[in-house]
Length: 319
Image 1 (tube, helix red, strand yellow):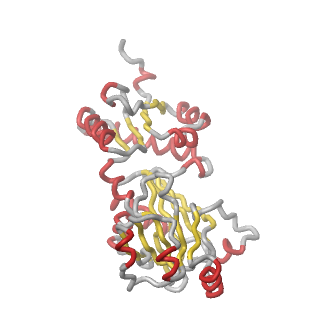
Image 2 (cartoon, one colour):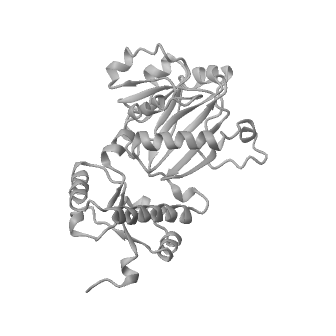
Image 3 (cartoon, one colour):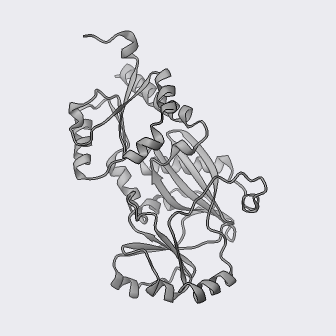
């Protein structure tokens, strides 16, 4: 049966997401809002070939693994006019905390950098690791940022004893220079051309007294799971008042640079202010983050898919 004009103009977005992501992101208010703007979301069965499902104008996903990558590759080859967000090869870079930050240095943006860091592959290497470019305190993070339960397990280490015996993070891992940053982190959400910077609470500044206390009472190490907390309103919040938001022009420049360097459309990056050097450090980049935490995320993400739809229509007109 041929499609009606109304059906023809609708845009079908297939989604392959973990259950917890579906529960947080694919909420009724979003689905209904998008439907009112001719965007229809269709669940994907990741155990079956994509080519046997659909049809899809666009596919969004947050699944990893060789079989899923092959499934996507076959779909891309069979449906060159469909849009897959985003390519697995581009996402893969963000699964490693060393490679994810490498593009930052190549952006050549004044007052933007990354913390000094070194990777450690195994426990034996940890005993003899060279930390010439690092000083205590330092962050210890899993090298792999693959969305697993252990990917967010981190430690703050203040001396060699903590590094040698107190870690709860198993290798492979990353040692990253800790920088006092006013207890504030800037989370910058990117969805295509859309950029939004929000202020969140972070680890408080570490004083000499804190370092001495951790060394005496906690074996030189403090472990935790997640750094960022609730959005800081700034009203009566001392850390929020102390650390000013970066300028919109600076945030846009970094977001645009990363969008092109990473080849991704859906990501966010965590940035802190290094007051000693009067600049900013990008400390983490995440793929397909929690956009549902943004105000009016329904309209933000619907506009994102409308832009994809218009891009496809323009491409067809010029072919």
